[in-house]
Amino acid sequence: MSLGLNQNIDVNGETYHIQIEDKEKIQSLEVRVYIEGRIIFQKHHSYQQALAENTDKENPIAVVQEELKKLFCLTKAAIERGKIKK
Image (cartoon, rainbow, N blue to C red; front, side, top):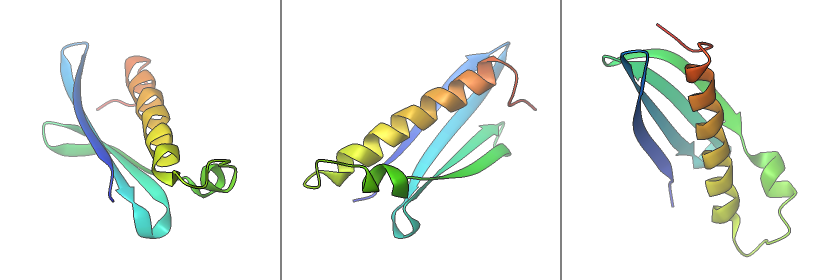
């Protein structure tokens, strides 16, 4: 099951589109930030370590969902602080 997130946030008059996609085959989340349809930031975040440390082996999807939430919060904060911009 592939997980993902798409959300727009407005910061200083600009609309940033945050897209996070699960690249299941390589156990990585890919985050992209767009302004006006143009990619201004892209990064892969491996969740292999989080899966290895998971004590609930029955529910690996919950681990990926948690990593996705963390990555979204970090990306949003970076935009709000001006670390990711046009």
